[in-house]
Structures are given as structure tokens and as C-alpha cells.
Amino acid sequence: MTQKIKLGFGAWQLGGECTFGGRQTGWGKLDEAEARQTLLEALERGITFFDTAPGYGKGRSELLLGSVFSAVKPPGLQVCTKYGSYENAAGEAYLDFSADTLRRSVEESLGRLRLDRLDTLLMHGPADDFDYGVLDIAPFENLKSQGVIRHYGVSVRSLKGAENVLNVGFGDTIEAIFNVLDRRAEERVFTHPAFSRYRFIGRVPLASGFLSERFLENPGLRFGETDIRSAVSPADRSWYETAVQKLCFLEELPGGISTSALRYVLHHPATDFVIPGMRNRAQLRNNLMALELGPLSEELQTRIKEALPLTNPNWIKH
Image: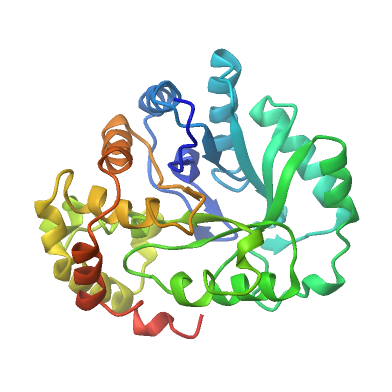
């Protein structure tokens, strides 16, 4: 395939079981052999964009990607990783976006990934009120001039964070939440005057797996204690249950609700890459189906918007 494929590979799940800063941040036990086969098939099917971070499994996601990349040496590879989120010896989480940390983190990530350069480097979850105006961009620009990175920007916590990045004009890439259950980016990010010069990476396009046939058919589904979704608040859990049921008409389409929901985000004109998490070949093939089927009809897009508000009312302040 020579055309750009917007479907990326979200590799957070490849970190497996993990706690970070005293919180559950993993996705349960990982079948590593299946994960490797999923990565290999993704590369064979033309996926070139992979999103990871040092905090995903405390390096395990990057290590697994690196072992596959080094064996296959895929052409056109684009890897996005992050920096700035760490855990100290006492198990406490902290943020550090200093220039020294930036350089050291990039070198460590390249070592785990077994790569010489990155496509994209993102600040990992700075506070929404982070002052980008006083941030020295020279270390980022130096990495670009040295050919170590091609792009840099921010993986934001919320839409407020994305607006802050756009208002200041930092970097050229924003990674933010965008899915049919949280469509606020359409009103708050894509319409911003500065947005045209940014690349947009849509994360959690399947709402952390709540947009799935499995959850649609079993709203009472409970996740294991080492799965980050087990910590979702009762109020948000209740909202997910109601919202997903209102989208049951998407289950009637090819691939079901997950493939259909992904089509909305994947084929949106404002997205450059969309990174559903994948840990097995069945998930990969559903996501590839969303690529192959093309965009949802305007009628279906309207039905989604009529069925649900822009987002969970509890999230409006973010």
C-alpha cells in the first residue's frame, strides 16, 4: 500500500499488568505470543504508525515493539512515544519535562524500541494549565535538526489541555480523546484557528473498549482487578452502559458496534492518525475492517449525534 493509512496501532495494552503511582494503569494479563503475531500481521497489512510510551508497562510496551521491529525491519515505520511521566523509588508518580529529562528519556526509548529515530515525541499528560509559553523549545528543535525526531507536541489529558496547546502554538502534534461518546474535539479543537497547522492523533477511539459488542451485550460486565477499567467510577460506568445501548443500531452494520464506531473517527477529515488499542488479531481485523469499509453515511453520523450529547455531562468541565 502506498497511500497513507490513518489507522495506527495503540500499544498501551502491550504493557500488560502494571501499577503506576499507586494506581492500576495496566490492561490485565497479556498473551505476549498473540501480541507478537498481532504486531506482525499489522505490519503485513500496511499499518506503519505505532503509539507507545515509557509508562506503558514501565517500558514493556516499547520493548515488545522493539523486538518485533528489529526482527522485521519494516519500511516506512512511524513510532510515536512520550516523555515526562515517571515514578520515583517510593512508587510515587511525578512529572518532569526538563531538557535533561527529555534527552535521557528519548535515548532510553530509542534503546528499548531498537530504533535510531522517532517520528513523533509527545509530552505525556502535562497539567491542563501547563505554561507552554515559558517552555524552552530549543531542546525539541535540536532533536529535530539532528534527525532524532520529526515531530513533537503533547498527549493531553483533556480538551482543556488541547486548547491550551493551540492557544500558545507549541509543537505541531496533538494527541487527544476523540470517539463517538466524546465528540467535543469537533467543537473545541478542530475549529480552533491554529488547528490547521497541527497533526491530530485520536486516542481511545473505542472508549477504552466500552464501544464493543462484548459490553453492548453484557452491560454488567466486570473487568479484572489488574484492568484499568475496573477503576471507572460507578457514575461513569452507568453512563457508559446507557450511552452504548443508545448506539445499538451500529451493531447491525458490518463488523458491529466497534468497527462502526471506529469508522466515525477514522474517516473524520480532521484526524491524521487514530490509535485503537490492540492486543490480539481479532481486534486488529475488526479495526482493519473499519478502514476498508470507509466512512459512515451522513445519515448514520446524524443518528449518532441525535442519540447522544457531545459527551458525558460529568466531563464537560474538562
